[in-house]
Length: 377
Ligand code: SF4
Image 1 (tube, rainbow, N blue to C red):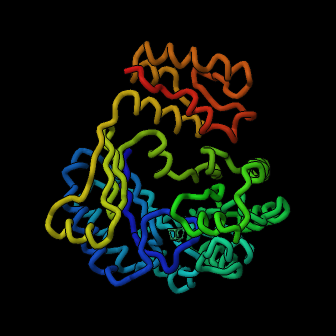
Image 2: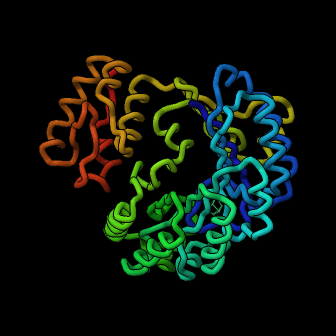
């Protein structure tokens, strides 16, 4: 099970909290598409033995592309890679791009999953975040998209300054009213060098409150699990049969190829990341040079990553896999490390898998970090 991630580094406007790689200038859009297609060709040997099960257009805002351009990129994937018969093909989209005409066109391509960046159904939250869409567009686009796509996910953000528990609950209830099969939800985080950080530092926006985020998270888990969604990863909730195959493969340590500026790749041993500059990326690819840096992961790095991603998912950390992949020493170390956390009811072992207990749910990243090995191998 392998996937291809394609980064579309353009956005109509910069959301205040965002630290992803994108440009608001669309001047290089066509040159970028040609460069993405070239990179797909350049890297086909990396994946010559792999079957591609998932294709994911992320960004940035992939929905700024015309559907015919998406088709061109998909044709290059089909041409150069062994794509399985019914791959999951996801497109991240923003509500302001999703007119009925555009949705119809997208539905006529081989895209079969839409991930829509709703974030909130309330004007005040959208304004604070500087989203390009308004509350009406947020609601309308889901209703329209549901007429053409069955597999839809939306993103919601919680812990936004000024967002009360009531407003957050209303957001979740609105989302549930559309009966979409998948919801991803993230806490608003303040990243360095973002407008949000500058506004908070200047006192223009109230600081993000961790306790509020925690309260919102538990409201989210309660409401969505009561509505039949499975919280299969810390931030992801899906109905049976609608988990993101792309993200699941990533959390399970499968290989993926990242195409485009700032995209990351992983081949099971080594991680790579492309340059995060559109002009330099295009220039380098056009000269047939892959603008990528790589890092070979040590056994300890791979172990720590498995602990971190495993504890965020319902599949947990397989103790058999720890023994098989990392050896007896790592296995014994982990069992020793978890003793206290099991006593504190933060972790449990079930069917030889280590899982976060309900009490530890919001703390899973911190719990994982406590289990990391710093200097064993
Ligand atoms: S649309 Fe997405 S990628 Fe673009 S600025 Fe907003 S959060 Fe970042």
